[in-house]
Length: 310
Image 1: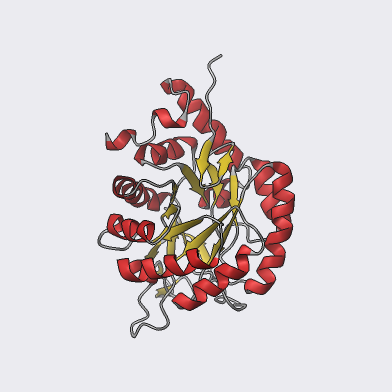
Image 2: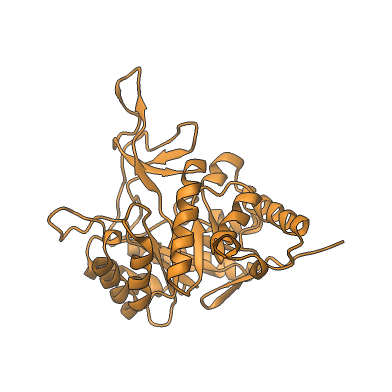
């Protein structure tokens, strides 16, 4: 029987499978991250942590609207100080399973990003993911850091300077004029990898009630509706920079994962699929990806990575 090799490399770590639990899906509880690892994830990402505790938005915060999920959780988290404790426990348990831990962070200013990164690095995650889709509180209009090359690079440089030797992946936003240029800017500032992409801002309205379904009115769109946008963004990033990419957005099957690799992704982030299929989706998608590779005659991910851009 023909077999295939699903291993891939992110900065500093080798993954047994390219399927990565995306940030925010199962929180930062060690037990839930371990569950994801045992379900078949090659790496797991914690929920984003910021400088201080946040309660997030009131319910409803997440809704399946038929073509995907829209959510506005509101960056709820216990704050970096408590997050370090949670991450340290998760790291110990995950290391025993051979599954890397990716710690996600956010901030409201360049300085906050550096402060949070320095604190989180103490937990010794294998990679720190820098969520730059948050509003810049120092900006007159609260423009997200991901919106421009200069702001994205400034955050990247601050985080890189604060984390010692921990590699960083910068998570880019899809709603920008040229994601490739922003990717180039953050790589020049020290990013070791790119996570592409975050959710796409949107709104879903309850026509009978005449009001948005989310308490926050707007939210981030994920799930199947996001996949074409994510594939385009990953392809543009892969054409612009030569660093590993965690392609994230709309992956619910092994075929979706294959498409993400064909666009240029090194690893594949999976989030909404856990909503639809349960945590077991992480292993199932890997199995489906392997079956697709065998059917297509591919023995390794490298053989067809970037195929759609050739």
